[in-house]
Amino acid sequence: MAKRPITPAYIIFYILFLPDSWRILAGIAAAVFLTPYVTGTDMDAVGRVIMFVMLAAIGYAASGVPARVITGKLKKWFLGDRYG
Image (cartoon, rainbow, N blue to C red; front, side):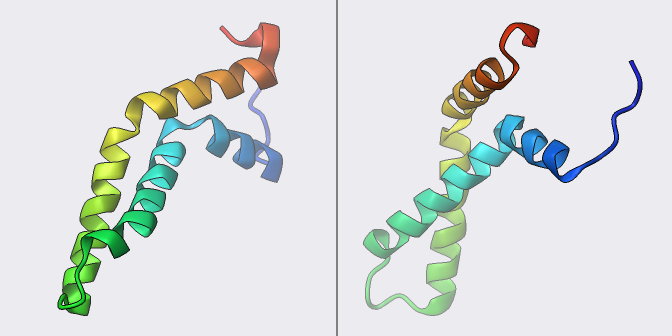
């Protein structure tokens, strides 16, 4: 098989089919939505940043199976019969 040229469409599909991109997105979303509920008003900026990073890491770790399911369905949808 010949080497395919790297195009913007190739990069976008590679990102869509990579489970880690979905895990990163889920981790950031969890941190954005949960940090205000977890942090108190007495916590300083450093504490909020640490809590944000912790929640992002927990969201990343917890979304492994859903990310694999999402990428599997996307591959099946986009590639159809060519998906192994």
